[in-house]
Image (cartoon, rainbow, N blue to C red):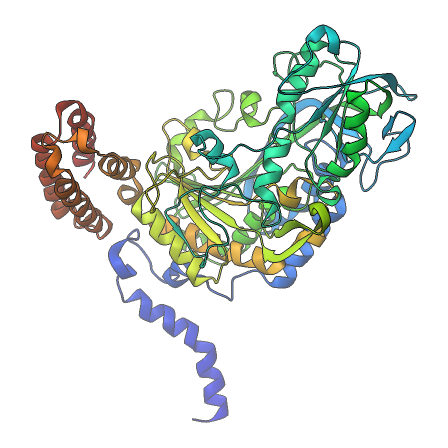
Length: 632
C-alpha cells in the first residue's frame, strides 16, 4: 500500500465506517426510521465533532473572570453577553428571552470584601468574617452595637430575651443513626441503580466526615441558616452571627440563597436582620463572648438593587422543526450562581450544541431546545417565581406537547475538597474529581442502560446513577435518594416527561464566591460533556414508547411488593421473582420493537397480578398494565 493511498484511505475511513453502520438497520431497531448517514455520530461520540480540551479551559476561564453570576448582577450580565453569541454561532435560532425583574441583594465582597462591608468586633476584638446571610439586610456605616446572646438548642432563650440583641448560633451537630429518609436524602451516600466507583470511597448510609469529602458535611451546615433566620426574624433580633462547624478555608465566601421575610416569601417585605457567618476557629471567641452577654459591633453593607434577569431559550432545529411532527429534547441549566462550577452548566450545553451543529438539520431526528433559567439564586429559587417559567401558564404551556424528554446539566468539572490537619482546619483539594450524579426520571431500564453506557464509553470517573421518581430501593435494597438537580424539569411539567439530570456533587467548593479556576478540572468537564452528548444523541433517536414513564412505574410497583401484597404470603419470593423476570422479558421486547410479543407478556403479567396479589394491591397495578397495553 503506497503512502499516498494510505493517506487517502485514512481520510475515507470515517465515511466508510458510517456507511457500513448505515447498512445495519439502526443497530437494534431503537431509532426513528429515516436516513442513517449520521447514525454513528448520533449513537456514539464522534471525536471530530467534539469540543477540545482547550475550549473547555477557555470558556470556563472567561466565566471565572466574571466572578459570581447572580441574576441581573454585573457578573451575570457579562456571562450572558459572552455565551449568547456563542450559542447563536453554534446554530441556535428563534431565541427568546423572558424578563425576570426582582430586587437583587448585593454585597461588595468579591474577590475580597472592601473595608467596612463585612466586619465583626466581639468584645473589642476584630473577628475574621467568612460571609453573610443573603437578603439579610444591612447596617449603617458605623455598624450596630448590641449585647450578644447565645442560642442554646437544648435550652434556648425566649423571644423577649433575644429582642434587640445580636443572636449567635452554632450549627447543630449531625445526628447519629438510625437516620430518617429525609436526612438520608441529602447528608449521606444512599443507594443507587448503578455506579462505577470501585472500591467505594465510603460506606452507604453513614455520616461522611469532611476529612473524606466536604460536600455532605458542609451541606448539613449551611442548610440550617433558614431555620435560624426564622428564629431571629420572629424574635426581632438586632442582627445575627452564625458559626459554621467548617474550616476557615471552607467557610470563606460560602453563600446560599435565603429569604429574610416573616413568611419566607420573597415578594413579602424583607426584615432587616443583618447576618454574618464565621468559621469554627473564629467562632470560638464569639460563642464564649455571647454566652457571657458581651457586646459586639456588627457591620454588613448590603443593598437591594432593582434588577432584571433574563431567561434564554432557543432551538437547534431538527428535520421537522416548525411542523406538527416536531419533537423537542430540552437541555436545561441555570446561569446564576456564586462560583465557576455553580453554575457552568450552560457551557456544557454549549459544548453539546457545538457537537450537534455538525450534523445537518435534515439528519437531526429531533429539535434540541436550549433552556437557560436564572431563578435558582433569586431568593427562594425557581418555585417562588412560577410566573417566569417558560412552560408555565403565562408563557408557553402549550409547548409541553412537543417535549419528548428533558436533560438537566449543572455543576461541571468540580474538584473535590476535604478538611485535614489539626482540628480539620486545613482545607484543600483531595486529589480526586468530585463525584457526578445522574438522576433518571424515572427508573426506565433503557434510560439506565444508555446512561451507564455513556459513562463507560467516555471514561467518565466517579459516576452514580439514581432514580428521581421510582420510589423504590436501590440495588442494595436500601433507601435511594434523588439526584438534587432542579434542572431536570420533566418531572415538573404537566403531563410529566421522561428525563435525565446531571449534577456534580455539592456544595464542596461550589458554594464559595472565591471558588473559581482553582477547583476546576477541564478533563472532567470534557468527559461530562461527551457523556451527556452521547445520551442526548440516543434521545434524538429513541422511539417514544421505549421511554414511556409507565414502564418505570410498573417496575417500581412490582419491585415494592411484600409478603402482605400476595394472597399466599408463602409464595412471595417465587411469585415476585417470576413477575420481575416477565417484566425484564417484556421490556426487552418493547426495546427491540417486538410489540406483539410485548403485548402478550403484558397479558401474562396481568393474569399473574390478578390471581396472585390481594385486590388492594392488584387494582392500581392492573390499571397501569391496561394503560400500557393500550399504548402498544
